Length: 398
Image (cartoon, rainbow, N blue to C red; front, side):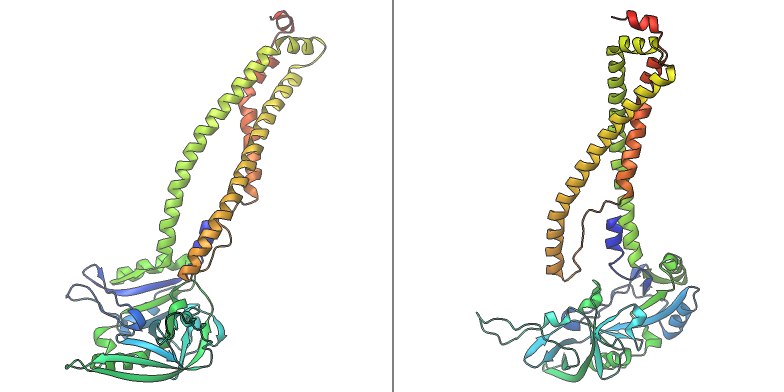
């Protein structure tokens, strides 16, 4: 249960990432170090491109509330703020407000304009002084909100000479931490990134001819994500969502639950046999006592209730011991696992988990009730034997 809660924080499950398909392969275009990259892979054959008409087709699918094209920075690039240099994945998005992606601002705004940039939570951590001397203390991450930064693009001519182009941008907003790629990204209007890529490649970009490398589809509810994804695939595009990852993890948990359930069933059977054996031996040892009880007026119901109560008590005590041991082991695992996972999250820039093992209140209550029932069920046959004893024969038993 806790694992699902942690997983459901890894991204927006109502978003679908759509890409054109090349003979079953996916066109991948991604940012390189500092925003460079953007190469594609696939088979050279007729495909259905993510043109503006295709984007409109995606928007008309029932359940879709937005289809937003996204492009990447093709040129090598770095960002300068005073004496510091930094980098991050640079994206151009076809929307005026990043709230369409479910992102929120920690400072400033999520709105995009041609002269501003919205950066992720971790982007300031990637700034460093390129001229720092050995032994010098590195400068702290800069506060970039509402500051002017310079984005520098790099390319080379045929003679190998470096050519640079600078853009002065104001940081209009810093996004709240989300634990996704947005934490390390810088967002610009799509048209601005398109003009930068045209300068970097030296060719004019027409999305109606080459298509967008990626379109992000926003669905009205996570419950309809897989349904919409299947419709997108039927149209002819590649589509994936974080829900696919969550489902894969859930399938693993299901298999794990079946395995552990099998182990638990074996342990339960052994425990039930043990309780039945204990009660049977107890009845044999107390046969004369049972005969005496019946001789002084105890009914079959009284004897049956006595021994069923004892069997239920054995089951309850066993269940209580199991609950206490399991809870203590869970707390010990929490102490170790949370510290380790927090260190991993800190090194990778993720959100540290608050708890590793979570025990819902209903679980120990159910365990106690179920163990009591199993104890009672296991002692039913010995208790019936005791209740049906003939007093005279029981008193004669040696």
